[in-house]
Length: 314
Image (cartoon, rainbow, N blue to C red; front, side, top):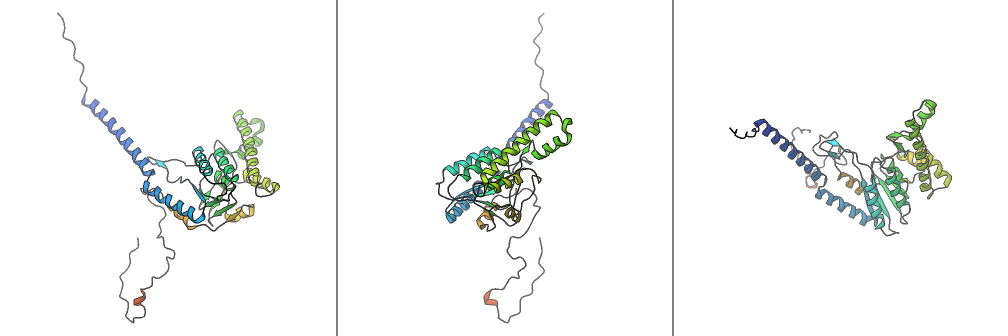
């Protein structure tokens, strides 16, 4: 007697709920990514930046290039993403320099923690070979590779509180000078991996110092350029050591402090995320302690001022 074919087992309700939950999770994840990407490409804000750059170019009759990295702003789903000088930046800046007439000045607005040595050296060399005057504006900081780029300029305009930084190479996130110091201390007890890193560190220091000396010798004597190159690349300071305006002048950098207002206005168009709670708050007026004057038609009327109630503070 033939038995009827067994019917396939029915899927339980929990299986369907789990499948639905997975679908909802992926849809929410895609939506969050799209929102994050859309927030980073605000057309109205980009139009405002373009307008300021065009105004700056018209005033100075120059090619204005902005290289601005805001580490505190870039994030994906709340996870901070480091922003630094990379090959994409060097490609874009080299393209802008090629499109600039040889005798036209170039103004580079620089705000960066540094980045890839190769990219920074490409940008610096292209600026150094440009025949027109090159001016670098540093409204806040230009560290490491940013300082390397600034060395190619005939003039570095810094805010009075802005800083530059050393250009000593880093191997795997560790200062090359520190790796060499470890080998000198441990000597025969150093591991093969450490010895390999020390070999790379020694080569990196020589390469960076040689490049910086060649770059600086375009506007100063060779001996002075070599001495400054060694000071900036040998690791005598920590990599985040701030070189102030006064220190930069003492080292021989062509620094001035007359920062144009438009540079600050451009930096204001790179705000911190609005969703985060601000840690600094102030009212943007030039003289917050000044007492407001009454209108001209109320001055000297002999009428007593109307009483005012208490003012609330935020």
